[in-house]
Amino acid sequence: MSSRPVRVRFAPSPTGPLHMGGVRTALYNYLFAKKNKGTFVIRVEDTDQTRFVPGAQDYIMDSLKWCGIMPTEGPGLGGDFGPYVQSERRAIYRPYAEELVKNDKAYYAFDTSEELTQMRAQAKEMGMPNWQYNCVTRGSMQNSTTLSSDEVDKRISAGDPYVIRMKMPRNEDIRFHDEIRGWVVVNTNNIDDKVLFKSDGMPTYHLANIVDDHTMEISHVIRGEEWLPSAPLHVMLYGAFGWEAPKFAHLPLLLKPDGNGKLSKRDGDRLGFPVFPTNWTTAEGDVFSGYRENGYFPEAFVNMLAFLGWNPGTTEELFSLEKLSETFSLERVSKAGAKFDPDKTKWFQQQYLRNTDDAVLAEELAVFLENKYPVNKLTTVCKLMKERATFIKDIWTEGSFLLEQPTIFDEKTTRKKWKGNAVELMTDWSKDVLNIETFNADAVEKQFKAFLAERELGVGAVLPLFRLLVTGKGMGPSMFDISEFLGKEECAERLTIGLEKMAKLKPEI
Ligand code: GLU
Image 1 (cartoon, protein in one colour):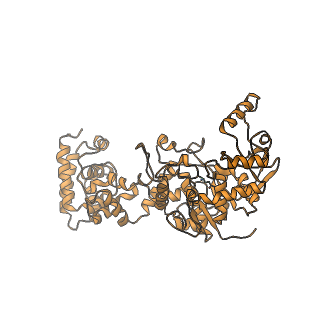
Image 2 (cartoon, rainbow, N blue to C red):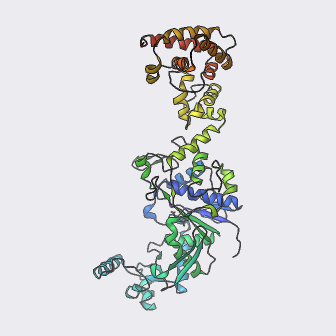
Image 3 (cartoon, rainbow, N blue to C red):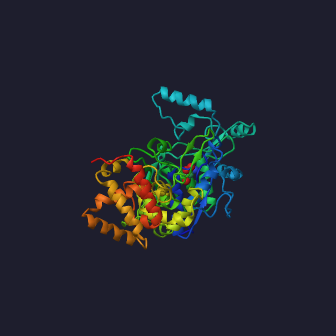
């Protein structure tokens, strides 16, 4: 086996938004290229013009960019093997299809769609519901294996529509080695004479895919398991052209969280998590939500995706893109389908949020809050709150009390704790607060402990009241840290306002 420079490609069809399974395929290609100092190419496979969706190509490029997995060659990026969009390459395919006909590996077929439908119906009647255009049936159809060459020439010059079909040999085993699945053997009796070139002058996916992978010098084809059934035909085609086939690696399917079946585009809405990297708006205006708009960091999304079907063989789970590029290998990609886990996805996001600098988070929070608050204040908000958040927006949902006085007081804490001598205790404590000279977390804690000792009270009897009045909440970060952040005046003011509001509630005895 010659060792060619590593060149891999991601070959999406612009038939809609890129599902996260597609992003994972792109990611593994990217990682494989990086690891092997190779080139990552993107090629847009748009030979099926009937399924073309405007905007899909831009969506794909934009999503890959968001994930940080941009190819080095591709549409709009340049490279020596372009164009990288198949419809712009249409002129190159026909000669290849003709070459196969000349070498008796393919043939012209003139059957009209009515004739094909009739043939299928007839076969069904005869108890053969799975009629195929193959080595057995081709003998009874209208093609260049049954018509004389004069007749074929006449029909072609008369402009009769035709397709070019692969001449699948009878009863031959096709073997190839898949980098993930090992040896795969398929008998040609199970494969029909696939159309390679269509009557509209366009190649089919199979022909264009093989010609492009060959001419773009692709060394490894890394793609989803759904393409495994096509691989034997592709291997045959490489043989028919006398080309060296690339190595194949078919990635495991992404499964629904319960493991029952493939994770589909519709699952996102049904099960309450995004299946697309970024928001996708249909021509009708329907929006399918994406990870980006749901507040995920691209690093967390990519880390999660990398682990859907691959693992490093250790217990380590947090991998930056760079670290993934150093560690990734196809040997550690599993054959078995990978169950998508929405909770684990959140966990990854949480970890990345925690590991991000407070100042960086604050910049993002500032944008989220439309620059309503200064970044230095938000930096402390992030520092105090990030352990309790998954997304940037949670920092605010949970921690807005740090910058805005509470207007609502947690009902459960009020019910459980606002009783007995609560008013008296908090009135006394607010006086103590005002007496603290150097007002910082340590000083407040010291004063608080002295307050408890004097009254022989436990923390649980007083701290929740202090928290309730100052923050409105039943839980949160250290009250001493919160106090330091708010400062003496603000703390005292909140205690006073809180007491006034709570007074209306009359503590129960
Ligand atoms: N165009 C195919 C797709 O949409 C690519 C299959 C392949 O990578 O060969 O997924």
